[in-house]
Image (cartoon, rainbow, N blue to C red):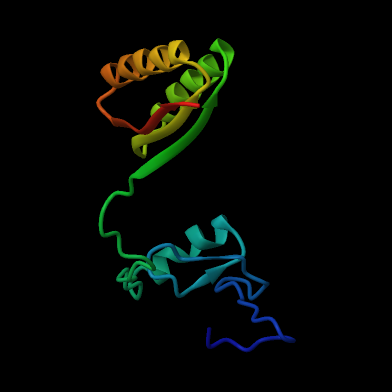
Length: 137
């Protein structure tokens, strides 16, 4: 960042050949190179001064987890199949910790089918599966 620039964009120069550089030392982030081969060639010289104490740009506090909300209008067995398929796909995602479902069924029979499918889905996963609403129109 202290190198001279040409025009409005800061251009870094290769430590070996002084050509335009596109990458920098992964350890110290201070020395720039035009190619991997120049970085390897310069390593014998650079390693003595390479601090390798780069502060991470983002400090990881914890693993991320996602909760998904599914809204469903269940009007037929086909729409129930689609919702069940969607839930199965969502629950395979690594960072999804849980799924909350809000749904409406057109008939009492469909409502019973939905509740049975949701209970089966809940039984097949260690992730949280909850339904917020379940009512017949």
